Length: 210
Image 1 (tube, rainbow, N blue to C red):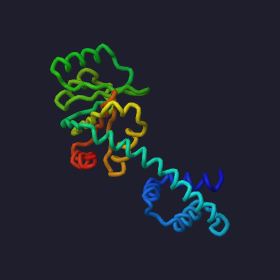
Image 2: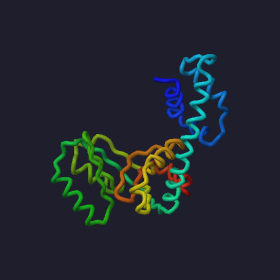
Image 3: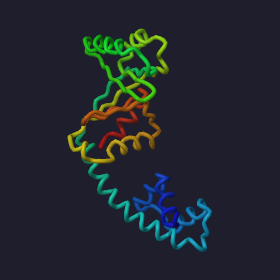
Image 4: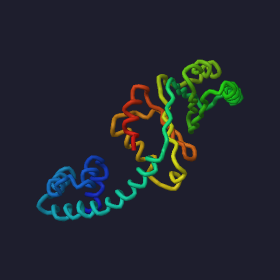
């Protein structure tokens, strides 16, 4: 890999450095020496090439700022709904799907939350804590994991979110950088749903004031 590519990869793999570079809050010479040291390059021989790579990447990141402003505009037009006392029950994949349909029918009659996330190896059922035991009753020995005391944060965005790449990644990074663990997540059309611990709701709401 060329020195230019190595330097760019280093910066992109360190979000805090990337953010400071994009904001113009970093000393290019200090950054270049740091990259040379961490990548075992020669400061004397490779310094100029690394410095040029840093300045070039800064110009590339300018286009990201324009794109980010589009994301923030969409999020600023979004509405947020929060529901607490949510549970997520993870099941083995080889369940009897007749039980799943019966459970769905029962919860929908009660107008309760019922969401399903299906992966290659497991199925997650999201509902209110009140009905978590009902889920376990239906599937008994198929329960892998159960999470309670969760909150469901639903971000209802304008339709432009469907054609604007990076919005979901932006939200995930926002939570991750502020030490908020996303327990489960799903999206459907213009709705983006995150499940977090109830104790993190206040912090999350502070971050979602766009």
